[in-house]
Length: 277
Ligand code: FAD
Ligand code: EPU
Image (cartoon, rainbow, N blue to C red; front, top):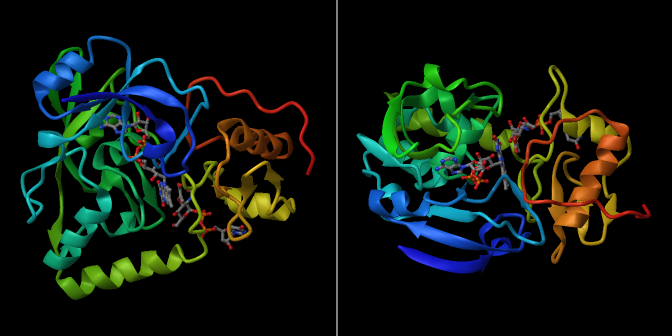
């Protein structure tokens, strides 16, 4: 186990966030030790906006036995495994089930917690079993027991996803690759700049990105934070953005549109008082 104070800007895809004490756990004994004081669980940091002041809680990162998986995708898969690596394996093996998750830069644990997905499929669809650590013990759950819906799960309070079993079906390499190509094509309009994916959930039957675009908000900039010209629901870090700048952009959008934030916000972030367009 490693314990170090690190800037979370380095551990999040948007590249924003102050320091925290990061506990990198490799065994169940490590996890037990790490959870003896208030904690948060970090996945790949791809849906997080962390305060510039960091967070006071321990930040747990999964490594070692929690990141292990069998290259044929059978058996238990550590929650610290990266979805893009599993996608690559499933394409090579011709196993269908994960294609809808193509392009999502998550760890398995973060994808379970957020029920990450696209209109082509979501994490919950391909889960057979989920193992959670909470209240000092490991327990197995069927996906029906975890209250999955659009970008949402109801894991017991304080749960750490430790590993999962996937439900995949043999479909052949060609079929799997063809479906991945469809999902890839649907993502072509998304920016490559540093982000945490879509900032807002889509309201039922609508697309937040379209609504933001229709308000003429693309290109709106606060400091080094900007609403992407490519996609209205991507708030990007132009390099050196602060959490306060990113959060001010969120509030500016919400002043005009009743949108629910999809990002997880860690710590206290106050919007900047006065910002010009
Ligand atoms: P983090 O961002 O690290 O954490 C997110 C939440 O999960 C936090 O509450 C954290 O505490 C919790 N968590 C993480 N690991 C665990 C664990 N092991 N046990 C318990 N809780 C845990 N999302 C989509 O749904 N669809 C998309 O198409 C999509 N596209 C994206 C594209 C880009 C370029 C980027 C940067 C992001 C995109 N996202 C998308 C957002 C993001 O990838 C997902 O929300 C993803 O599920 C976050 O996973 P993560 O491992 O990065 O979790
Ligand atoms: N649109 C605009 N202007 C924009 C952006 C989009 O008019 O600036 C329009 C598009 O033309 C399209 C519609 O809005 O008609 C939907 O856009 P898109 O196909 O890009 O999908 P989305 O609803 O914006 C969703 C997910 C993405 C996921 C894609 C791919 C949400 C909030 N977003 O985006 O997930 O990658 O579909 O299927 O559900 C994420 O959750 O972080 C995320 C990136």
